[in-house]
Image (cartoon, rainbow, N blue to C red; front, top):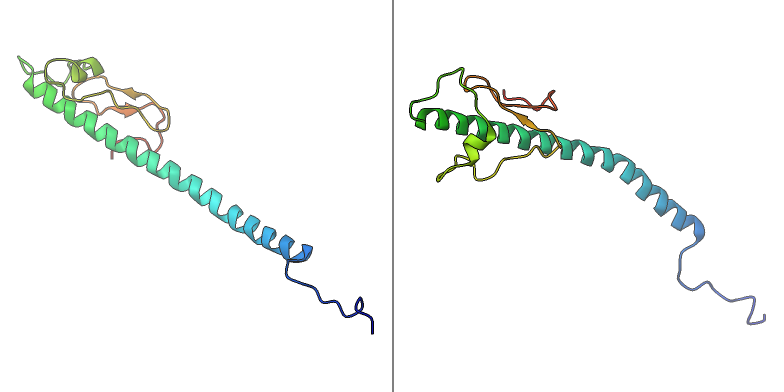
Length: 121
């Protein structure tokens, strides 16, 4: 026998083995990416609702601290909550999903203009 006919394959992967690994990784990504996107939007919604609660608490505190105290139909603006020597909010919060917060009167809950799940419970 010649030395060329008894040569054995040394290490390495075949093309089929590499393709199978790439296919498995692709399937895992197809499952993981949508779940990741859903979890990201869910956390943005929860952060927006937390901001709305913080704004609502700041409005109530501002209304009680004002002289004379503000009534339920008095208008409120973000400048009332962030301005002054001791602001009720250090900065104006922003919705993580890109929405804007709307405040009308003391009695009305603040809202996010995205709506849907971005509302106070």
